[in-house]
Length: 218
Image (tube, rainbow, N blue to C red; front, side, top):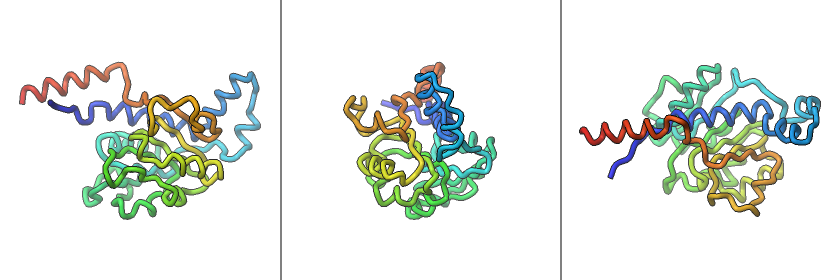
């Protein structure tokens, strides 16, 4: 029995960055308007939250392992400020402008324009983003989850977004998968959903095979 840590880190990080771009540039709304054949320039550009640049924005990455590290490289390349949150913050990284432990998560959340969850599920991280934690997000912040669905209290998420507590969320994972057709998450205007596809890419199995064979040779 073996695993292949980091085998899909690049794919997941790229997907997370794609979700960040989509939220920042209001692409989900543009797609909906396209389906209606409506030229919605005014609605997209003048209705809050307005399209924004990523340069100089702050990305908070919760979980600074292989996925978080790969994502930080992409964010830094765009000129973003990177704040990391990890179990052992003493393990500094040149990719992070600031590193916090989980005991300082609320402080980190308050700094983020985009908060990306990329941490594994543990007793500490199960429903990490509960109602109290969501209160620490800035009103114009976005939450992105490419970790596991149970990192978020989905009832609290729905309540916060119906109250316009923060700008919106992008979810590649949900607590129950496939997401049931009757879930309110499907129809919420400020939630963008992808069907747990972040780790899939053309070369995914090649990378896993390479790691398998490396492990067997050890």
